[in-house]
Image 1 (cartoon, rainbow over the protein chains, first blue to last red):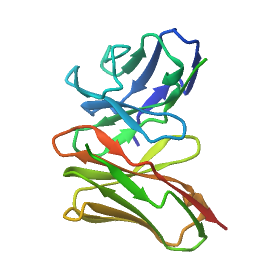
Image 2 (cartoon, rainbow over the protein chains, first blue to last red):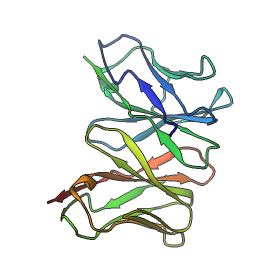
Image 3 (tube, rainbow over the protein chains, first blue to last red):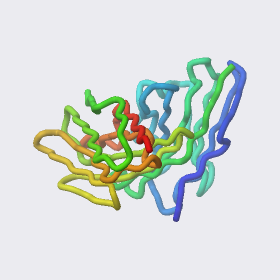
Length: 113
Length: 109
């Protein structure tokens, strides 16, 4: 069964460092998303991406964040200068057409120290 | 702003019990998702609904669009059902999911 894969599963980084979280969406899906979940809190939307551009983003997704689809398979989230409050589980998801079921990756746990 | 409320927040059940988790939301939606999150953190999609009822094994999900309410039922609950169950809605005209806080279910043998 096709699945969304994320790497790494866990990343520890020092405050101020740049991190790139990677995702491989399901191959025939066209819509891609990043969500995050701070420990003990609900999942929050960050950004959606379609046709090589951002289609929606939340207030959380400020200038420190960027997304990219560098090739035909990967979808990345970059955090330019990490803060302690960026520590969270980051989930990538993909959907065939934006309105049908979204499939989630297993998440990347980011710890900023 | 769309609010998604789930109840109860925590639920403990004996193995074999029938379980109901509720979700209500405040604005018009195009679809509602029920998701399962295990302690390791991964999220698995259980159902996506826009009307009526869906069944998968021991899981049943219903939605009432007029009342802005959905329920997830688990029949003959089992300890392996222990997880956090999350309701998330796709607001009409948007591609982003808005999540509830989740219901933590513990099924005791």
